[in-house]
Image 1 (cartoon, helix red, strand yellow):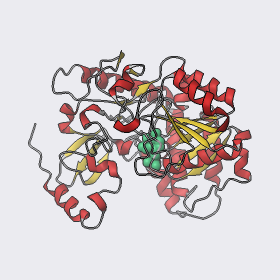
Image 2 (tube, helix red, strand yellow; image 1 turned 90 degrees about the vertical axis):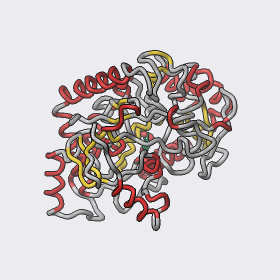
Image 3 (cartoon, helix red, strand yellow; image 1 turned 135 degrees about the horizontal axis):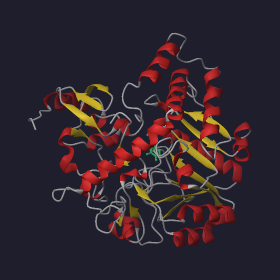
Length: 426
Ligand SMILES: Cc1ncc(COP(=O)(O)O)c(C=O)c1O
């Protein structure tokens, strides 16, 4: 393997640091070693940095590039739209077409609100849930990530050492403003959720979770857990919200809810939807989403912007027409990567055995003791993301892990494997 140098990336970072905190535009990127990289181009599964180093890209833009970089039909649709205008501040035909597609493909979707980022769409989902139920409390889970907006940054991936004992973790706000209405529960522990809802169920608007704990280490819930969460939400009249920002259109065309056969009330979609063009959506039951015709403010200058919408239509067109090849391919690729990763005996930073309980590595992203009890560290097929030893990453551009190793409250990076999103170009 030839020696790589990173001088230009380093000098770019030095320059950027003079005017941009940490020199990066999303904090996660600062975690990359040996240095946060600056890039000049990307195509297919390859990405090239300013020093001329080429990598196999297992970041894929942190998930959106499911079709690989520069997917031809998406770029073609965007080029056509560029000639017709970027932003109208009004409606256009492609918007309704996109919403119709989402309704057709995602089991929980009867109505759709378009936004720009996953974080915003999570915010919109919580607002819809609060308006529809007339309640304030939100239940979120340890180790789950729902974007950077208040209040859902509490107890995200990483190891909040001050979060107290299972099953009643203390809310750790992570510098955000978190009101008393945010309740935190250990994930994948049916009894803990039942107990929490027995205490707070009638004041809870939404139970929000990643249906596969992608950000916490790519973990499936145990058999029956999601269905039980669904049942408990029904019992207490709370809305179940699946954050499918990563799993949407990736784990299956209809997302984790289709593959795992549990239908939430509201679903948050983003990332793979736009092939890199910024777009997100909240989709849900018509009866619940009706509040968006009344009291709920959902607005945004760039919502439904023409470029992102046509990119999303073109993306879904590929995924829908080629679903019989796309999803088996992702399954095969992620399985191969997983098997390759587990055959590396030493120097690895991800120590979970395939299909074995994650007992030692803290790979949920929460404290090791919390993941010992229940979650299964599943093969990478969990979300068509792979978790791979960093020892192998010299020729690959791999995700940094937000916060890990940067604060005393968090576990060192080696105990927080980040998922490696794959694309059909890999
Ligand atoms: C599960 C999940 N939800 C929400 C978000 C936030 O999305 P965005 O970064 O587009 O705001 C992310 C981002 O990684 C995510 O993984």
